[in-house]
Amino acid sequence: MACAKLVHEEAKKVVDHLREIRLDNLVQLPAIIVGGDTSSGKSSLLTAISGLNFPSSAGLTTRCPTEVILTRCEKTSAEVSLQQFDGMSEGQRTFNRILKEDRSDFASTITEATALLTEGYGGSYISPNSIVVKAKGPDLPDLTLIDLPGLVAATGEGESEQMIKDIRDMIHKHISSPRAVILCVLPANNDFHNSSILTMAKDPDCDKEGIRTIGIITKPDLADKGSESNVLQLAQNAKARLELGWHTVKLRSQQDLQTRSLMEAEEAEALFFDTDPWRVLDKESVGIQKLRERLQELLFRRVQAELPKVSEEALQRLRATEAELNRMGVKCDETSKKRLVFAAAAGHCHSLLEDASAGRYIGPFFERAGFENNLRASMFEMEHKFRNEVSKTRSMCLGNYDVGDKVWYKKSEEGEAMEAEITAKNAGKFQLRVGKDLHDNIDPDKLLPDRRELLDLLAKMRADSLPGFESDVIFKQLMSRKLQLWANPAALLQAETVKILEEVSSRAVMFTVPAHLPSLRSYLQEQLSQAIEEAADKLDHRVKQVLETEQKRPYTQNHYYNDLLMKFRTQQLTQKLAKLKDYEGKVNFNA
Picture 1: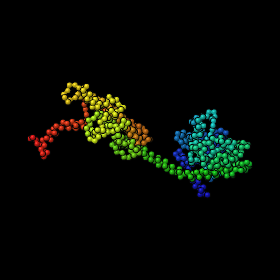
Picture 2 (picture 1 turned 135 degrees about the horizontal axis):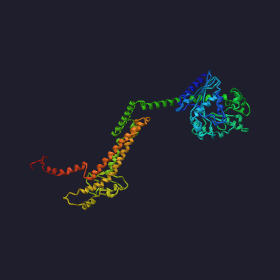
Picture 3 (picture 1 turned 30 degrees about the horizontal axis):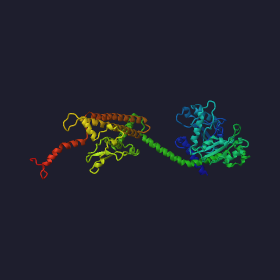
Picture 4 (picture 1 turned 60 degrees about the horizontal axis):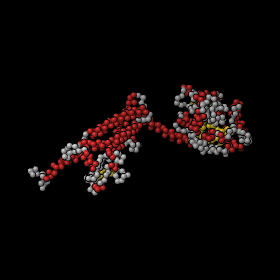
């Protein structure tokens, strides 16, 4: 028993220390949360548990969370401070009150701390930051409670409507933690169906099944005559079933606070529950002393079950934070360090883009992104698409194909265009009009004519010329029509190239520059965008220049044309040389 008590004390100290260093902002900690409607008797309940006279009135007295850390020890002491939070004023930061030995100044100290915390919150008068109460003494339980403001349905003079929502949001945040035990405080003179805190506790986001909620019934002496049986059924867990059950206490009234000590109040409470109709209740579920024991046991079990999980979560957060710090690199508090960070980020980004454009897809930048950062592969795909679109503009004349020619055709009207090479076997298959079938969405007048139309055009454009030499004007007109079909595929290739360059470069910047350096990210992205824009302008100018050159004069870089021309030019010479060969295959120049 002594060993278990020691384990409980040490485990509670660990959790209290974790809460003191604000680990609860990152990891949910086991806790007992005290909630109830306003004037439900929460403050009187805390007073009875802790021996500290919390401010109590008929109105809203708790306006911020109050952490009550109770420790059993020989020495008696108590102090009140404020939880540390960002943006604290000097007065809030330095607030720390050591209470008198009789703790008679406790209520006034809590009132002062509440006023200090709620300043600046306007008519809401509700602060999300906590008052921390630490009390030690031989008669105190080893217990930590978090008291929250009481739920309200209306506001008073000078109070903002926002206060109602602020309180509900605060309570929901605390009781939705799966590691929290919820103390629902309900007065016996109010039907439990009207309890807002019980409704919130059973919310699907909180404790719908009632596994970690314990109900506390206060003010049984004020139950309406004739309704005692309903209160008894509730206390016996028959009306609103909770896994942890219900506990009933009779606390000091406002008048008793001035005339009756805590010890006298506990004696009067014991006598009350020994009278009808309350004597039927289980003695383990009535009275403030049994409640202290019960809450200690609940907290111990909760801490015992959850502390290993808390430890693991804290370690995970620590590892993640260390990894993030390592990724951030050195602290840039000097110009020289800033230059180093900039140079490293810019160099890394440049290296990634070089690899992407060269097709060296190695490393996490490429592996984690699937294929979207494979720039060279994407460029090949777009270039292939462009070549296909341009190839489809080739006009196919009717008949008279040579073996080896390549044609585009459709197997059916709805089918996709396909490329095929004419062979001796399939030559007859392509004796059909295929050119215009490939361009149903383009004006047929912009297509090159077939052979019969070409002959008709030659006749209409005939001018003075030597036999066998047609006017180059005809060729220029034919090419002018052709170039109109190339403009759109070229423009599409340009736009797609610029788009993918911008996307890959943006991802490279996001990958190399940490999120905590947004200015550096923005700067590198601006520089890359500017460079891409300048390159796009040059590309656009060059494409227009090529198309204009084609329009102005006959011009080609097609090596097939040059090869064919040289073949025709040397054909006669080759034939004559062949005739000069003797029976051994040698050329006889004297023949």
